[in-house]
Image 1 (cartoon, helix red, strand yellow):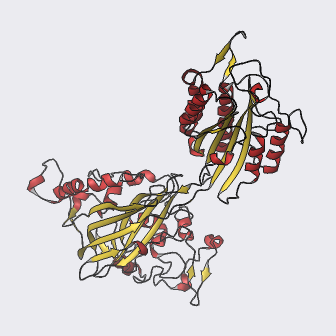
Image 2: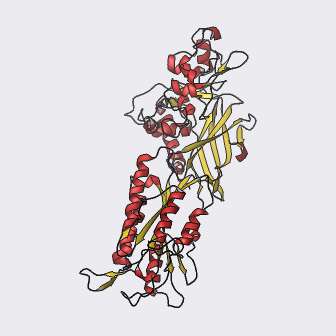
Image 3: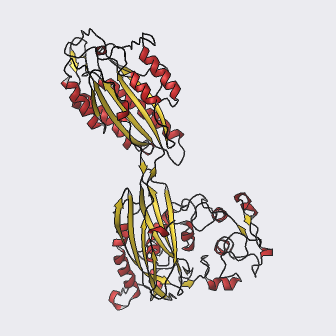
Length: 563
């Protein structure tokens, strides 16, 4: 099984049921319905039927383009200094100069290996009785030098560069620190949702929460001490942080959030068991790591760095096309020798060449000209001298060969060039202009409009025969007429199985029986539509072509055939 925009396996599973209804419509008394109005039968004109056997693998995972944002949440309570008296049960003198907290942080930031696929930003939250960000920092800072200067100033505090003395005082309010972290990330994600353009580059938020003690604060009224509890005080705030990933507005811009915790202490003093338990619980709830650092150990921030992400690719759909057999507007299956989508018989009627996709050499295929103007060429003989020059497409950089034939590039590589996409009001940069995942040229051949906003056409059942346009394309049926008008035609049957899954690459075996053929050596094209697992609207296409073997009436594809 695999994740896709449409449940392809379900369609294949139900194909026999669909075919049963097709056969019911085509046979006589066995499925007779006296209420049906007799309709004219249309003979299919099929030469024969063949089998497509295709083995293919999805594309190799690629490094994900991402934004990585570190949020260092740093304990500035009085227990970092010697001589603590406000809570005698807590540790003290754990980091009087800030060298354990800030020195390794700055070194970690400065020594991050450059990654062309990742842009990195940094933020700090200082907390004791309350939580704030250092002066000069509002959320995250993308400039490394600026961030290092802010962090260094925060480290020095009331001391000097040679003798830092961070501003450590008061109690240890975990809840306030987590609440501010939630606000910072929510505000940043909201800004990302406004500023980003497609394709979306999502953000990984990596919180590193460092503390030397339990979250003991003054209770309401200020006369007694209260130690914050995980379930009552901390877990609800952590849930709010993690739930940002599920926010309908923000989730497309958040690839992940991780809350990591570090406990630093003096070996001469026993670790605070309550602090250890709470920090471990926080990391578990925040899908992060918990690490302890004893006396003499610096906080190793690099241990909290996330691994590089790879983009896995998912199978979204598979389409099989006979390039030399086309269902025409009258519902008849007809030979199309040049594979341009315009049957030979129609080309002969209009004077175009059934063996040339672009009879007059103007860079626009006979089918596109026919669909946009009602005829494949300007002149009755399709002479190049009388062809439409399509000056409107001059911006697509046309080229000419030695014979004067014009050609345009195809950015989407789906069978239509950029000029043809423009003339059809499609998107030259996408193989899937209308968003239905059916490749544009294949859609055009099946008379499905490719213009954006027409994705629901594939799911329509305009004739009320119980089979949607999409199902007809999959079953090899014409969408131009009601299925009740078809006579003597076998619908396709398909099976798709996963053969292997290694290293994030899935390989499949597709078998399609009863592929209608118009000639002994029809060319078969298989479209494999993949989707990016991180960005669900970023589908891309692989294709392969093979000539049908007339003797065995098979077209066999192997993984290396697909490009």
